[in-house]
Length: 107
Image 1 (cartoon, rainbow, N blue to C red):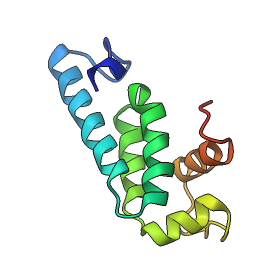
Image 2 (cartoon, helix red, strand yellow):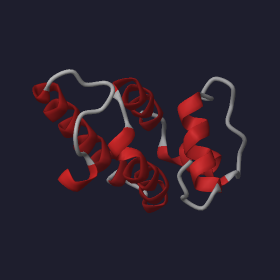
Image 3 (cartoon, one colour):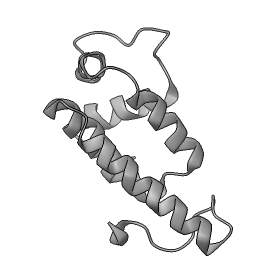
Image 4 (cartoon, helix red, strand yellow):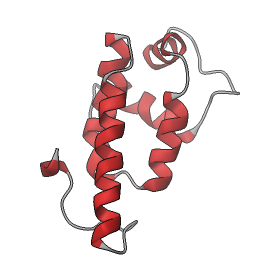
């Protein structure tokens, strides 16, 4: 995973913080690809893998909040089977939805 994260990001101010950020990114990628359902592993894990090198602390917080949602709900929303309800809607969930709808392409 080291190849994905090189140098300092705008969120970082010291090499020690960079190491902590890299560790958090790797942990988040593992969690995103081991959710419990293959469908969510592919959708959310694909998004995290594509964005891993650019995720800052605030984005990881938002992503972790999305990942607290149930796989069945996320799967329905991200595939368009069910619209995202207002109480679950967030900019991060919309970003993941756009990523999935775009066939896994990033920005």
